[in-house]
Amino acid sequence: DQYDPELIDGVRVRWISQGVAARDETAFSHALKIGHRLRKAGQRLTDAAIIDAYEHAYNVAQQQGSAGRDSEMPPMRDRQTMARRVRGYVTQSKTNTSLSSNASGRATSSERKALATMGRKGGQKAAQRWKTDPEGQYAQNQLQKLKKTHRKKRVEGQTTRAKIQALIGEAYVQTGEVLTRKQIVDETGLSRATVTRHLAALREQGALPEM
Image (cartoon, rainbow, N blue to C red):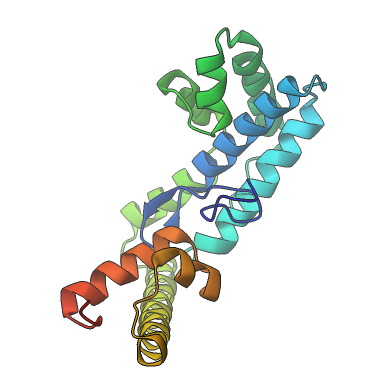
């Protein structure tokens, strides 16, 4: 994990769209990964350990991509059900290939079904309120939050891109060479995916030095 720039506090955040994290899926996948890791280390797959992993990943996803949404952490009863599901998936793994795949946090189609039991009641209620009263105060407040969040994300993205462009330009002036993606990741502390995205945009704009 320490060598994976895509991880945030040990968690691989999954995304519904830019700036909007898939919190339940992120948390479940992380709990699954930790379950396999515990089993491989010969440690007990306790409810507490699995639930702690789930809660940690959910909170990371909420922090990184709430998009104005309130936290909708499933109730403890549903988290305990999730822990039993994870323990079942982990203990039923037969092959090293299966272990390797699941250890990366990638849930299979059958494992994803467990998310249906994770109590998305808060999301369902919110969706119903949007449907029944789209012009109401709740819907309008949520729209304003989303607009504010998206505007902030857009400005943050523009600022980050400008910093990367300035870093590349300064290095080019001083050395005559264009920084590699790894060098930019090391210099900025950004994830590899973020740097790749901004580099692609800068190239499309013709904003990078020609080599």
